[in-house]
Structure formats: structure tokens, C-alpha cells
Amino acid sequence: MTMQNLIDEAERDLLHTYNRYPVVLDRGEGVYLYDTDGKKYLDFMAGIAVFALGYGNERYNGALKAQIDKLLHTSNYFYNEPAIHAAAKLKEASGMDRVFFTNSGAEAVEGAVKAAMKYAYTVTGSADHEIIAFNHSFHGRTYGALAVTGNAHYREPFGAMPLNAKFADINDIESVKSCVTEKTCAVILEVVQGEGGLIPATEEFLRELRALCDEKGILLIFDEVQCGMGRTGFMFAWQRFGIKPDIMASAKALGCGVPVGAFLMTEKVAESSLKPGDHGTTYGGNPFATAAVNAVLDIYKDEDIPGHVREITPYFEETLNSLAADFDCIKGVRGCGLMQGLIFDRPVAPVISEAMKRGLIMINAGAEILRFVPPLVIEKEHIDEMAAILREAIAAAF
Image 1 (cartoon, rainbow, N blue to C red):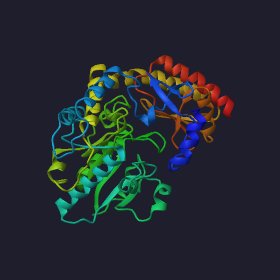
Image 2: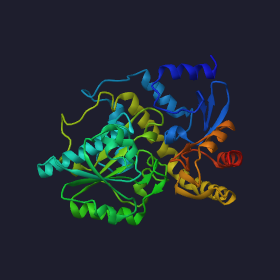
Image 3: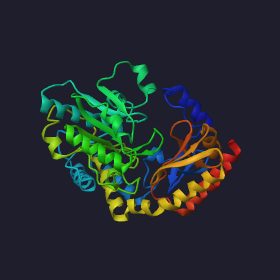
Image 4: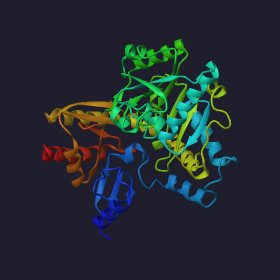
């Protein structure tokens, strides 16, 4: 079956909610992907910041194969050993106290928001509360996550949202203060905004936000779904400054390809929030998914993946700055670690298309920003290869 035949079949059978690239990917090796026709692509998208360890990692694959032969699923009526070990390792990596495993990032955000709302209900006896989120943020497509996503066009077709949210501006503490009322129970923030344009929260802003939440008795939720798991050079982006949240959401690279997420909280929040019957999941934390989490966290620790990101980032940033200097259509570079963006003065879709033709997979973050979220194991030669292809793609596109 040709690649076009496969695409035609997909368009007949799948719900058209994605404008996919006209490529059917078949296999991966290292930081490269191959389509069903055998064409090779350098991957600087990593499944949207998921495949941090690249493709075909023997240790990771071996752990999953071994678990398949033991036990895939039990339900949460029982304990399972991989989930117990994964929770302990995730607590160690994050410094948080309690873990709930989910199937995705959106579910992790849903759980984090529910925990905050239940905490407020326990403390105040009222269910009438608000959450402050941020303009241009993205937290997921499910209703609760959508309610705190700061792009109105995502929310408008779906009517009333299930919770009340107000939207402030990242790195503007006065805009946050203007949203605070006696009903405010939580603030949710991506420490580095992803879909919103690769905007890092500054240390000053995070400290001010933490102080404001402490003063007002408001819970601080960090969404680390995309920016966490070593992408900024620290296991979680907030650890760069040591400003700890009350609740945190994680996913994407947590499973490096296996669908798994988690929300974590401090003991203080756990004691007064979700109790038996308040929240649950059939698949979350099953043996297979948490075997992936165990393997990922072990590899990160043993191979110091965050350290490698800190080591390679200066060269990556130098390369992006060189590209920006050489093309008038590029206005600047923005981001943190291996989560970077080139800001253009025009839509970048033609660049992505030309890069794909030349064997480079990329993604945007908004119409005019080219996003770079490659596997965290890239080396200098991969950055050089990316830059060479990208130069050709920009020249061809514009």
C-alpha cells in the first residue's frame, strides 16, 4: 500500500480534527524518523516534546517488553509494583509529596484543578470559587483544561465552561492582582508557555506570584506538561529558580511515548483535597504505563539527561541566534533550554513545509513562531544538520 493510499484511507475513516502533514511515519531510530516510503527525517518535534530519549532506546524498550510479558493492567482496586516504584521516583525528582497517575496531560490538568477546587471547598465550605489562568496559555482540550486555556477561540464554540476562570498576563504581577477576589482558590501557570509562543516566566514574576498566593491563601498550580521532564535543563522548569508549587501537572516526556501523565501535590493539599470517591481512573497508573515512567526516570538519572540539556543549550541558542541574524524575516529567538522558538514576521507554515521536503520535521507555536522541541539527546551534529536544512527551507519559502 502506498503512502498516499494510507492517507486516503485515513481521511475516509478518521474524524477530521487534525490537519496532518502528508506523511505516514513508520519507524524511528535515534533522533531520526522514517516514513513508509523509507524517507529519513531529522526530528526536531519529538512528538510534541514527548520522545525525549529519541527512538529505539534499548533500555527503555527492554523495560516495556519485560512488563508486557508480566502484566499490563489490573485497575486501581489493586496495588501494582511498577506504580509504587514510579511514584517514589517521581516524588524524588519533583520534591512533591503525593502522586496521582493519569493517561494524559489534559487529564493531569483536570485532576490538578479538581484538587484545588476540593481543597477550597474543604477549607471554606463553599463550592463557589474561581481560578486565575493566563492569556495565551494552553492546558488541554477537555472541558476543565479548556476552561483555563487562555485562547478564547478554543473555548468559544463550546459554550459555558465548567468553572470560572479569569485571565492575567504572564510576567505581569499587577494583572494577576487585578484578577484576585475572595473567590480565587488557585492560579495555574505554564512555567514556560508552549503553544502561546515559548514565553518563559521570569524568576521575579514567579517569586511575586508565590508570595501573592501565600499571602492570600491561594494554591499555585504549575503546568509542567511540556516544559517539564528536563526540557529546560532541570527536571521541572520551576526547579531552575527553586519556586515550588502546591500542585503540579506532568505528562509528555514522563512516558516518552507511552500515554501517561500525573498530577502531584504537597502533603498539605493532599490532606484537605481529594478523598476516596472524589477522583479516579481505569487505566491511570497501570503496570505498563508506570513501567515506562520507571524506565524514563532511571535513564534520566543515570545518564543525567537534564545535565546534557544544560550542556548543549548554549550551542543550540548560538545556532538559532546565527539564523536570526542571517534572515531579515526572523525577528528574534525566545525560549529556554531545548524549548525554543524563532519569531518570524510572517506565517511559518511555508518554512515547515519546505523543511519537511528536505527531511526535517518541525512544528509551529502560533502562526509566526517556529518551535524547536527536539529529543533531549541531540548532539551538536544534529543541531548543525537542522540549521543547514532550515537555511535552505527559509530561503525556498520566502
